[in-house]
Amino acid sequence: MRDYYEQARVSLRMYLERSIRLLADLENGRVTSLDKLLQLKSAAFHNFRAAETILQSSGRDITKEAEFLDLWKEIVRVDQDLEVALHMVREELQDEMVKSQRVRLNIGKYRSGLQVRSAFEKEI
Image (tube, rainbow, N blue to C red; front, side, top):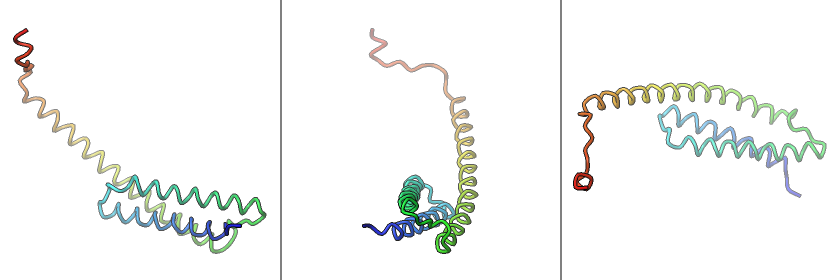
């Protein structure tokens, strides 16, 4: 039989490590890998929940054990920092989108308004 206790512990540690990596990437301005890291983080949590469910069905409640409680406290702290960082990135992206829309409007003002027709359409 598999060691579900170890699987739960490793999965929760992976969740924490991926959260820390995601936070570091956000703070360093690397937003291109966010989607992949969020998927990996979610997968680690689902693996933990699966192992925890199996352990609970066998009568072992790991949610009350000190090692898991300490890990969970650290996860909560990192996730709060991550939430703030994601909010800041979201605001920055919204500002960039507004600037982009303004530029597009300004570019649109300089177009003549006349539609350019292809030579093919002129001949028909």
